[in-house]
Every structure is written in structure tokens, then in C-alpha cells.
Amino acid sequence: MSIHDTGPPVRERQFTDLFTATYSAVLRFAERRAHPSHAEDIAAEVFVVAWRRFEDVPTHVDDARAWLFGVARLTLMAGMRGEQRRQALAVRISEDPTAHGHVGALDADLVAWRVDLARAWSRLSAVHQEALALTVWDGLDAPRAAQVLGISPVAYRLRLSRARKALRAHAKALPQTPATRAVTATPRGSSA
Image 1 (cartoon, one colour):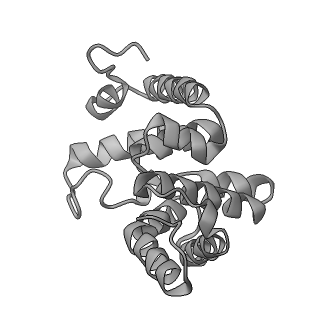
Image 2 (image 1 turned 30 degrees about the vertical axis):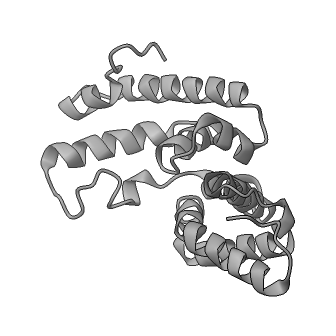
């Protein structure tokens, strides 16, 4: 996708290509951070901004997606105050039926694991939740996640490391069950 071609028909086609390639990701980003009834409105606002500032949208699809996530984040923050902002940025992992690829699965260990993870997650700061969400749920690498947050990739990696460490610490503070032990396990070769 090259956004630097000229002429209205070309711009419309390029915007349509961008929309087609990124809308579902932007909608999921908004759904995890706002009440589901507002997610489509947020996504729509993001693409209004993208249309108006189309020359500023990066040409590579992954970079454009990160840019759109940044616009979505700013849109969310602009409409929130105090606790509402925290709730808008909190990722609702316990409500995501596809988070583990087991739609409709009622395995007792899976349910316990998700409850333990949700409890540990709820104890994280909004900053740590956002860092983890950008990598885990939104699939962004450090440079693109940093772009969303308006920080350097090094600062993002440090924030992500601290967020992972905090999540493990919160999970370890829960009563130990097989599910909690799975959340607190440190991956081999990982010190963060």
C-alpha cells in the first residue's frame, strides 16, 4: 500500500485497502479497552482521523496498524476521566472467550487458570496492563508498541519486563492451586 499516490480515486482505494486490512484489529483493540457498546464508535473515530490525516499514516500495514492503535488510545483517553480512564485501558481478559483458543470449553483447570489470571491481572496497574496487552493481545513488537504509547522501544521493553514481573508477583500472592502455579511459572531461559 502506498499512500503517496495522487488523485481522489487512488486515495479512496488506498484508504479502503487500509480499512480492510486493519479494521478488525482496531475494533478488537477498542473492545478490550472500552465497553463493547462503544468500541465501534471508537473504531469509526479512528478511521475518521486516518482519513483526515491520511498522508501521516505509515505505508507499511503493520506500522499503520500501530499508528491506528495510537489514535485509538488517544481517542479513548480523551473521553475518559479518573476511574473511567483506568477502566477503558483495562483489558478484559476474563470476558474474552477466544483468549486461549478454547471457545466454550469448560475444563475445570482452564476455568481456574483464567480466574487466577484475571485476579492477578486486576491487581496490575493500568500502565502494566497496557504494556502486556499491546504485546500479547494486539501482537505488536516493541517498536510498534512504543509508537502506540509515544515512548522509545527501549522504554517499552523495560515497561513490558516490569509488567511481566508484576503479573507473576501478583499471581504468586494468590493461594497456590495448579492453575496459579501455571500462571507464576517462569519460562525457561527467562529472567523477566
